[in-house]
Length: 419
Image 1 (tube, rainbow, N blue to C red):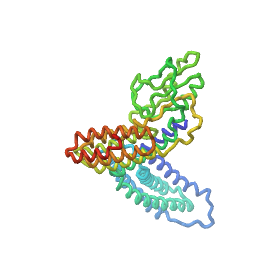
Image 2: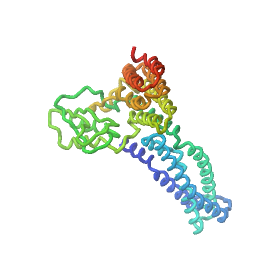
Image 3: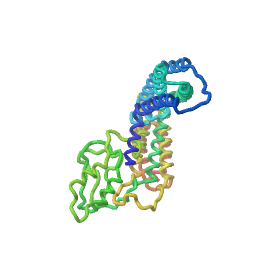
Image 4: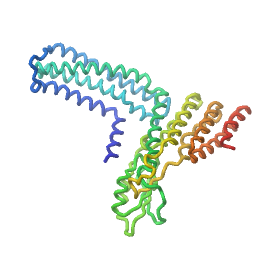
């Protein structure tokens, strides 16, 4: 249930209607609360606030907030389009989840609804002396929140959609996913030791990316039927109809016909990859941003160099983060889950950059320095993959760099991989 709630919350963060709807409901409740205080809040000498003064304030709010909300929506859409065009289309969900912009848009819409509802209630005599005073206080508070929100939002919208902001968000998403996976490398499952040769397979009946695997459901089903499971399709994998999701080793009795459907239901597929729970996707998006910057149409090697530095930071976090409890008993002992390989991480991060930047001396110099740094972090498997990637990059650079002096410079930087 907790996994489903987390998935729902993540989905609502990417829906622009969710927060405005909640804010509108709160604004209606605020007006109703002011009316309800007439019968419950006793003041000996309540301040007298004229209905005309409150009506003027609410009229200003109702007439201006809708215009500002429309302006905010237009600015946000322009920022989203800029992020997709200048960075990578896969970075769009990161920009869409910007809390400041969504909160600002919600505040503007909620202030408009508050003004309209309060104005209607006021003109129909729904408030007494105490209610008008409470409505006045709420109106002043809403005005103050709108002003503070607008000032903060203007500062954010000036950066939202810019390439540097999008790269920052992609790096943050990659770091968060890497940290989470390193602390729990098998998602709570047991290490893969292999199943018997007669183990059966559960295949996918749809096409998409695995975005989440409910290991609690798998473990409960395995315990109830005496099974041992090995997950094959981890989050981030693309599966087609008939592809294997997991392998099942049954006990002495035959497998219940309804069990495969229940096991298959634990794999949640989506049309696109998601950053949460998929560390490799963050690396792919960063690599795509660098690849776009190296395209002839853009010709921005500085962005590629910046991304390479960020990738080094991601791998540094990978090496420095250790599992929360290395000797702890797995939460789901009947489910074996493979760990992410260092080879896959290095390929996702650098293959596209090597391909697109092999003819750029400044990019290749920074790339070899980055790979040398990764090889020195102390993770032997990661170091081996970094050296292999450097050898591939050296062969491409030797074929594409125009000057012998540049080739020799690259060979000097690549000695850590060839010695």
